[in-house]
Length: 332
Ligand SMILES: Nc1ncnc2c1ncn2[C@@H]1O[C@H](COP(=O)(O)OP(=O)(O)OP(=O)(O)O)[C@@H](O)[C@H]1O
Ligand SMILES: [Mg+2]
Image (cartoon, rainbow, N blue to C red):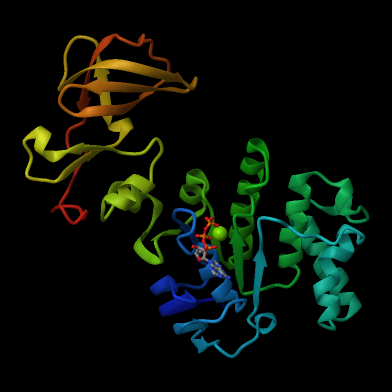
């Protein structure tokens, strides 16, 4: 069990309203990812769920029970932070078992849980080492293991992989996905990484300025963003936004994703000049200054050779443009 319900959750620090009424339901076993710009309130919301921060208003329910007066240690929650803060003088095994020991768990039970968790995270060879003798990725796995042994009903992760290098992030991302599948535990995960959000989440919550902009599955947010903010936030490189008036449209803004534009050297909808090409190997990002639609980013699959200054035409794929009204909301 590990369902969560937030009702009109508000948080102010002094005069600053950081969370402005968050309503959210997380069902048991769900993997929910919070994304949003720096300072929008993601960590604050996690800390409120964990009980590390008091509410200014609203309710937090875990498995239907209001937890306002339940101290963090008794909420059945384990939190994994970006900085893993392991005890340097303790072995991996003792780092993992410390919390249980302090809670008075019998030694045999602690052994059993450490064995199970370390097997799950491939940490068995390192149990007698100290954190200084581990790589960054191994340390982060120990931090996850320390959460795992507590057998929480709810895991909270606050950017757990952002200290790792690119290859390790991919590995650890995979491990977290597998862990979730095996444990069927509820997980709430904060990240700045688009790929992590898209690949791990059952449900993504897009936060902005202390409010939820949209909640939905990764593909739902990608295909049907509710507004310009979500459209610009989900997808990389980000969506192109074109002034509707320049295109003779009633919409305030027309959006088209870089991967939904094709280029041709002879003909197409918007004539422009290549100003820069980014060759990523698997694909190419072209930046084109067009007469009609302004600066456009185009993502082309594979290698595409175009010199700065060359004339090209960009054409949006039919049915793949978005129209936004003056309120920023998507138009029907
Ligand atoms: N203890 C505090 N006192 C005052 N203001 C705070 C406190 N903690 C957080 N804030 C403010 O609340 C806002 C939200 O902070 P929070 O850490 O939740 O953002 P975040 O979305 O996690 O950002 P990031 O992506 O940078 O981690 C920020 O403007 C921050 O300055
Ligand atoms: Mg944060």
